Image (cartoon, rainbow, N blue to C red; front, side, top):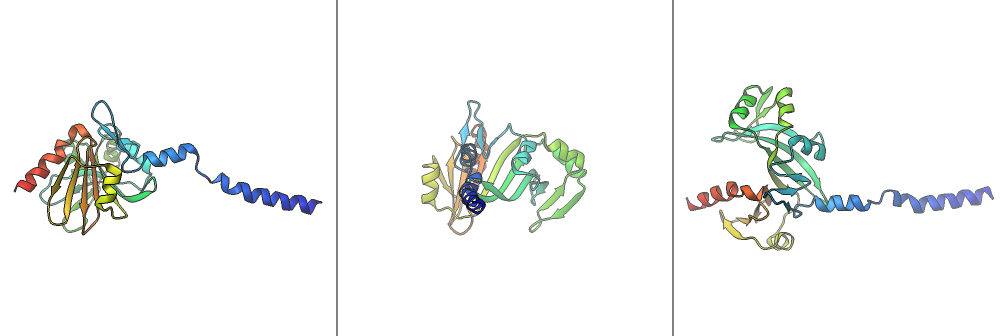
Length: 222
């Protein structure tokens, strides 16, 4: 009798065990709302993507969202003033993975002072420099809002897939033979389709879309 009870217990456990690891309705909703094409725009012209509201959510909130693997540094390419960025080499966004770069809003003079106090400066690819913040400046950076987000999916997206998820863009701007910018100003999205490389999704608040559109048009006009 004891043997029968034990066998029945094992059978019930085998049936119920997988259910314990099934995602809840809240988990499923959270994963879906984190997808790259899930963009919410508020009445103030800001957009929410990946659970973060641009020009409002702070770097500290992003770290809570993505964890301590988020690397923060001042990145300066040749001929540029540099930007305070947070980088994640592998971000899980719903069922989509890819590289994530957050640009943090910091005034130019404050950025210069942070760079001067950096604990380490090193070169990344080519001549791009990366300055690691001091502990005090890192704490300050955590209180600053996120200005823009760049996401580079792990899988290539063809134009058909893009249109099915994001809809038709309001404008297309080809910068060379293989790169085309699909512009969605109402979403604050510049989506670069590249037939020879990775696609790039750049998110800004819709109210600030001119920061993307104006230099892009100027570059094409040259």
